[in-house]
Length: 124
Image (tube, rainbow, N blue to C red; front, side):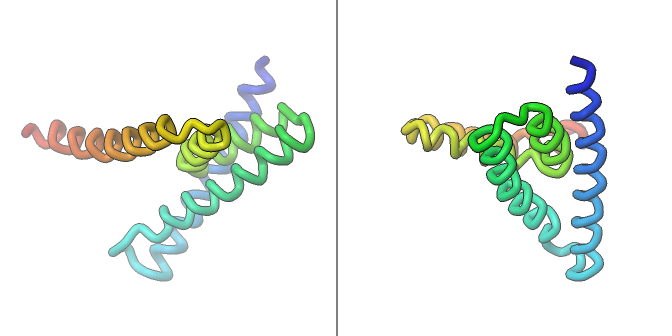
């Protein structure tokens, strides 16, 4: 069991460093007026989790690599990838309304939570 925790920790460290590198590179190249680095990270992470899921779950049974790559590396790189995979899984299971509700609730709730935290921290 501890091997899974170690795999997640190592993967998370690698994913976090990769995220920082990508975002900082985009800031150097394009400035920080728009979060292009974060957009890129979320897109790449969402694409990669689809590939990793296919190869470690559907094509081959590789649970140790799934934990390292999906939970660790991609979890550290972006949580958007997990969100995207969950939505795709719902859609593949013909759970259209549940997927729409999950997408809407997550998007709205996360933006509102961030806004509320800023207001709370400011003492509003």
